[in-house]
Image (cartoon, rainbow, N blue to C red; front, side):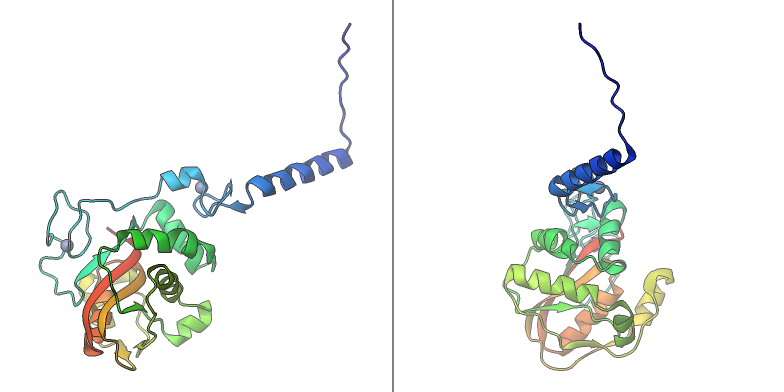
Length: 242
Ligand SMILES: [Zn+2]
Ligand SMILES: [Zn+2]
């Protein structure tokens, strides 16, 4: 006859079991997903990876805004005078896309750059043979506070992927207000004359930023790059707000 023993774990047993399972979890799920915070085998769990907010296609060939049909220009950009030729972003600035940006920007979690950002950005770049990769610069006071410029970290990673050099000759002249609370016109005024170049940046340039909102920062940078000798400027960001 089979007797069932009630197994009573002591507190010490429970602790050692927890340690054991935690060590096991570390082995299979060594980190936390930046999208939802659950244990994951990589920087994103499978569910968050499946929920990445892709911009997809069709999209406007000029500004990258999602459209109903393939279009050379769209309603969003037909009246806007951009100094760059094209703008692209793989994701919308929401959900997991926003969490990835925040992981880098506010928590300095760099693995997301090599593992998610740069590969996804490279995937949506339609041009090739760039002469330089240029990050949207950050004012020195803000950079000191944060410790890094996220656009520069992203630009360096993209530059390694496409094997083109980074130019650091684009600089901020003055500190600009945070663009978040400004209207489109306010954003353009806010960044007008905010950048300068410290040397020649000729040829075809890939301009990198974290988030594309109205394009006013990218456009102002592109205008300065043209003054520096660039013949074409293509903008790439990880997310766009629409
Ligand atoms: Zn997740
Ligand atoms: Zn457009």
